[in-house]
Image (tube, rainbow, N blue to C red; front, top):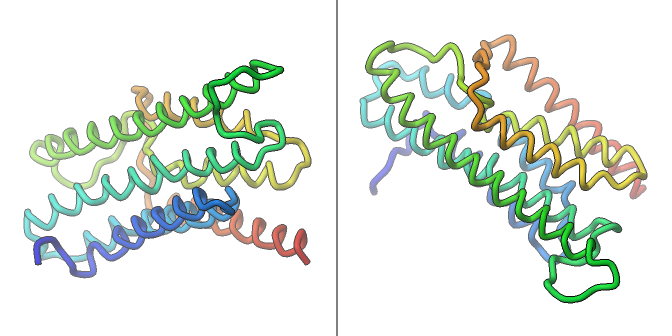
Amino acid sequence: MIGVYNYTVILTYLSMMSGMLGIIVCLHSGGHPYMGVFFLLFCGLCDAFDGKVARHKKDRTQFEKSFGIQIDSFSDLIAFGVLPGCIGYAMLRTSERFEAVPVLKPAEDNRMVLYPVLLVTIILLYALAALIRLAYYNVTEEERAKTEGGVRKTYVGLPVTNAALIFPTVMLIQFSTKIDITPVYFAVMAITAFLFLSRIPIPKLHTKGILVMVGIGVAEAVVLIVQLIAKFA
């Protein structure tokens, strides 16, 4: 079979499958955005360590390295580019303010037609921004590896993997309040998309920083689980 199947790519493959499951859950007829958040958090957990696991193999061939870079970006597009949009779409479906999927027909309040269309447009632009950033990263990473070597120390713009903490935080706030903050989720999505394509220098996290981020993600997951149990108990 073509491809790579050793331990260096296991976490990347798991992240992709988790992202796909999250998308399916969100888009299912009975899907709910909170369920998708857990899959997003798991994707973030896999991404936090996939690079370190891959670099642990000292005798990786150039093909394995290049393959790893490519599939990591493809997986990230699904997990952090598409899944957050599907979570937002699920919010749109379940929101009391936006009960219907966008429909282009007359309504008593035309804004109730325009708002969902605007929010879906933000989803599309967010996914496009993630795609552009990941493609840009792949090209520049190959060029940087030829000239500098070693591990990248800084990023230009916000890495898409930050979505694993940004959107669960918004959903945690939503779950903790009775106020519908669906528009806030989409505002954060628009800002995040802009940051993906910005030239703001972002330092690459080292092991301690990664562990802190993982700790935050685990804490968010625990709080969400406790709140879900309390709500349906």
